[in-house]
Image (cartoon, rainbow, N blue to C red):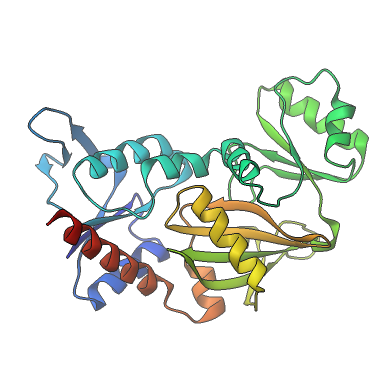
Length: 298
């Protein structure tokens, strides 16, 4: 079985672990950087080229596309899909998950519990926008941010108003979100593969920070999750069409809340925290679903 790992950074821990897991299973794995790819669209059949050569035929592709390459990465995934290659994260699912506003709208339509969130282009009444999410303190998030970048805690209504006006003054789109004080500095990352949660960790922010992202200096440890949290994570991933996802939850007084759904979850933190072979589980998923597709095509 031949698999493409769609990653612009072959040296990253997650990419290397996926390569190793593929090799352990006798798979032929190749890192394909979206940066160097270009596509042929013609009636004789779609092709993907790299460095003057046509890429070989693949049975499956594992997307590890960074936010900065979402548009072209999704275009490549559509090309792979047109060529009959299995992917656990489709082009449409990748784009849905990367558009935070669209993702939250989809989750809302599915009645998935999450912090109250507001969005406006140029609100006539900023105090009303603030009140919509329960008042201060509240969280402000850049729509295009990731890994905790562009996330601000506004502790007073005046501070929130000033930050909202500053962001809008430079034409930056933001989300205004309810602050869940009882979960301050902590969240859960549940890794969903297929229809199962295969690993879970709790992330704890460093002193003085309310963001629990590991990239911001947070710590991680394995955690026991409830059946409700497990079901919610799987439901959130399915709502966005993701076969593999990292679902971030907050524990609140009204139950677990979905904070975000990541279509390209990092493996280093959760493998270290849990001691599990997550990369291997992901490769086993590719093998299983590629075989099912081949049987259907016969």
